[in-house]
Length: 211
Ligand SMILES: [Zn+2]
Ligand SMILES: [Zn+2]
Image (tube, rainbow, N blue to C red; front, top):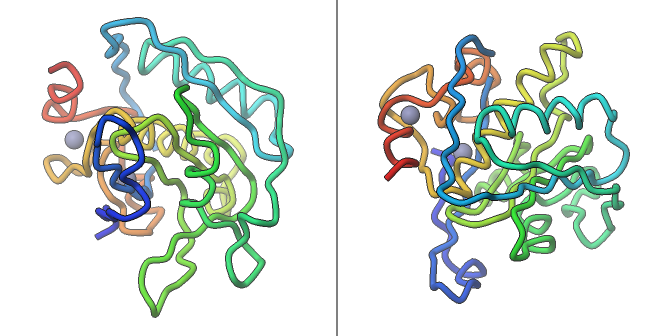
């Protein structure tokens, strides 16, 4: 589906990790898990790309802290650059974004612009909600496809799921097929799956993180 194992440009890190790209599409919530999954203290940096509502950034920051038990710091915004635009010039290439900002820090990039991924020849600019290295340290999420026909609050809940999903990929999690309510499901491009999910990882995904 949308978890792709793209080898080429992603054999970058010294650890020889296969940095597979995992796409996401996720959604609404109820229950909470809040245990620190990190054995040592980790800081996740939130990097706004262009203007993002400060309340939105704070909400995502709190969501990351609550769910992962990590520290979280919001960085000053930087602007998306034209070299990251897709061929149509109407959206940005998610893989280029995470490659450009990949570093030794854990970074969650957020944009309001549409982001896309080259799914196939037929769909060279397939719009997505988020993309992250698996495993790795960098992921990107976009509000663009999450806000259609819903309130700001509903959009934020979706964005939270997408953020926690992409960080899950960074931590090594693959897409989940164990439980439809798990945030690590691949929603296959539909917002319905995002909305079906809880703010929750199933026992399999959770066990993977605690290994
Ligand atoms: Zn995914
Ligand atoms: Zn799961």
